[in-house]
Amino acid sequence: MSEVILVTGGGRGIGAATARLAARRGYAVCVNYAQAAGPAEALVEEIRGHGGQAFAHRADVAREDEVEGLFDAIDREFGRLTALVNNAGLTGPISRLDEAEGEVLRNVVAVNVLGVLYCARAAVRRMSTRHGGRGGAIVNLSSGAASLGSPGEYVWYAATKGAVDSLTLGLAKEVGGAGIRVNAVAPGMIATEIHAAGGDAGRLERIGNAVPIGRPGTAEEVAEPILWLLSEEARYTTGTVLRVAGGR
Ligand code: NAP
Image (cartoon, helix red, strand yellow):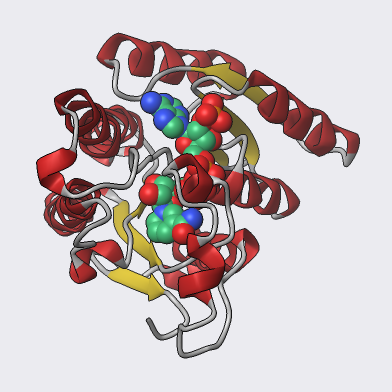
C-alpha cells in the first residue's frame, strides 16, 4: 500500500520542495494551495511526468469547511492519509506590533495556528488506530522565530510558531499510543518568496549571510529533514522540534 501525503501550501517554497521530494520517495502527494493554482498544477504535472501520483486541491487552511473538503478529496483520490506536512503559513507585512492592522493579526493566527489544528485533527481522525487507521506521521512547520521573538518584524508570527511548538508536543503525547508521531521543523532564513511577501525582499541576503553557516538555506535543505522525520528512520522520534537554521 503506498504512502499518502498532504503538503499544505505545497505549490511554492518549502512546501513545493517537500512535495517534490516526497513524490521521489514514492508517496502519493496531495499538493494543497490557497491562491496560486499555476505553480501547484505545474508541480503536479512534473510529478506525474516522472511517473508519480499527485493532485492539487485549493483550500484555505484557516477555513474549517475547506479543510474538511480537502481531506475528503484525499480520501476519494488516494484513500487513507499516512503523512501530513502542515506547511502553509505567512508572516503578514513586517512592522512593529503597535503599527500592525488587526486584520493581519487575525489572518496570521488563523492560518498559522487554526489551520495547523484543523489539518492535524482531520489527519488524526484518519491515521489513529483508535479510529481504525494504520498510523502515520505529522510534521509541522515552526520557525526559528518562535525562540527569537522577531521584534520589530512580526512578533505575532513568532507567537504563532510558539503555539505550533506547544501543539506539536501536546499532540505527540496525546496520539503517541495510537500509531502517530508528531514533530516540527523550525527553519531559519530560507530562500523563498515569504520574505518579499512580508515587504522586505532584501531581508534574506542581509540576515541570511550573517547566520553561522554563512548563507541562507534552501527549501530543499528543509524538505530533507521533514522527509526524514516522516520516515521509518525516525520511528522513535516524536514531540520534538528540529531546528534547521544554519546555527542561527
Ligand atoms: P512561501 O514561499 O511564502 O509559501 C507559502 C505557502 O503557504 C504557499 O504555498 C501558499 O499558498 C500557502 N498558504 C498561505 N496561506 C494559506 C492558506 N490560508 N491556506 C493554504 N495555503 C496557504 O513560504 P515558505 O517560506 O515556503 O514557508 C513555508 C512554511 O515555512 C511557513 O509555515 C513558514 O512560516 C515556515 N518558515 C519559513 C521560513 C523561511 O525563511 N522561508 C523560515 C521559518 C519558517 P499559495 O501558493 O496558494 O499562495
